[in-house]
Picture 1: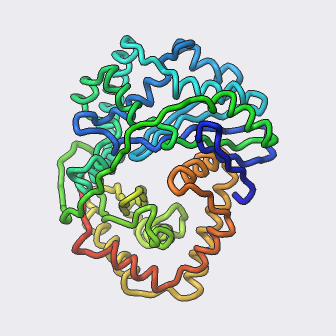
Picture 2 (picture 1 turned 120 degrees about the vertical axis):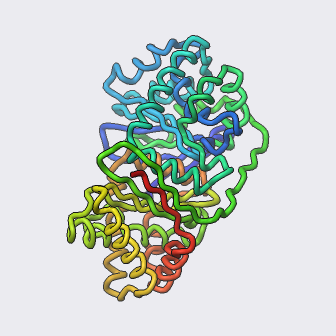
Amino acid sequence: MDEFERFELPNGLRVIYKAVKSEASHCGIIINAGTRDEEAQEQGLAHFIEHTLFKGTHKRKFYHILNRIDSVGGELNAYTAKEETCLYASFQNQYIERAVELIADITFHATFPEKEINKEKDIILDEINAYKDTPAEQIYDDFESFLFQNNALGNNILGTVESVKSFKRKHIQKFIQDNYTLENMVFSLVGNYKIEFVKKILTKHLGHFQHQGKTRIRKTPHINKAFHEVQTIYANQAHFIIGNRAPSICSRKRNTMFLLNNIIGGPGMNSRLNLNIREKYGFAYNLDTSYVAYSDSGLFVTYLGTDKKYLPKTIALIHKEFDKMKNQTLSSLQLHRAKQQVKGNIALAQENNNALMLTMGKSLLLFNRIDPLSKVYAEMDRLTAKQLLDVANQVFDSKHLSTLTLI
């Protein structure tokens, strides 16, 4: 990520661009507005807006929007998260202006026709019902709702049946007016162009918008007591999550937590939970950990899906691995290998230009900077076994670990 261009358009919109030798390009607008920016009665509104942005603009019907990139073999997509919304596209290099103009049109000129709003309600209600039929997905959101109780950060991204049914055009327009501001946006591009051409295209289609919203203050979630919830479901498997609050994305402990997560149950087949539970005993096929860092908080969770008869034994083994990380300092060789694995994962991720585009944009949005790989690697190399032990004792503290069981 060392060769990139960062600049601002005449209206102040921040842009990050990386030149790559490729036949395909990827671009997107990342907006610092998501589920946690909703009012209590607006649950699911950010996600609902993401859907309805595609339903029409002042000059396009929904089918014109959907066909504009698809007709040339590209892809137009979007996602909503707890803290951001993103509209993005992938396309052959020659269609950059088509993609940029379309994203600008959707973001700033969407009309939200009432007829389309009502149709989209049914689609999202169906999405909610499908989600409820997938306990392996629902358990994550249910866990967050307990962990971040009484805070919008714990709300389900999809919303509720009641809230979705209540949405009207005026609710959409108010949320956009308050949150879709230039200071809350970044445009990110990865492609094979000269910088002068990029600036010309982006200035033409994005440089004239002027929108400043009200100052927004996010409510930081309180630290709640540990909980141990058990819910009855009708399924062949038992589903289990154990987790705790973890360092935020702005914390100095973030990289240590990232390394710790990779060691205990990350994507590698050599993670401790995978080796010592799945491979050694065969108790579980679905067993992994995740670390999610938000702007002012974070969470670490371990998810388990297993036959009900193996659940108690597997939970005991999970605690055993947590205790090892709390009490046993990694040797120099173990620490070195763990760091090399993480750095290798980061290097491989750079090969996915679409993911790189999104990562660059989010970094500029949150930190107003892009760290070169050399700095990322240097920070990883500076981590010590003592720091890892300290974070493990913080996150794996049995008094603060919470659990949710669906059985």
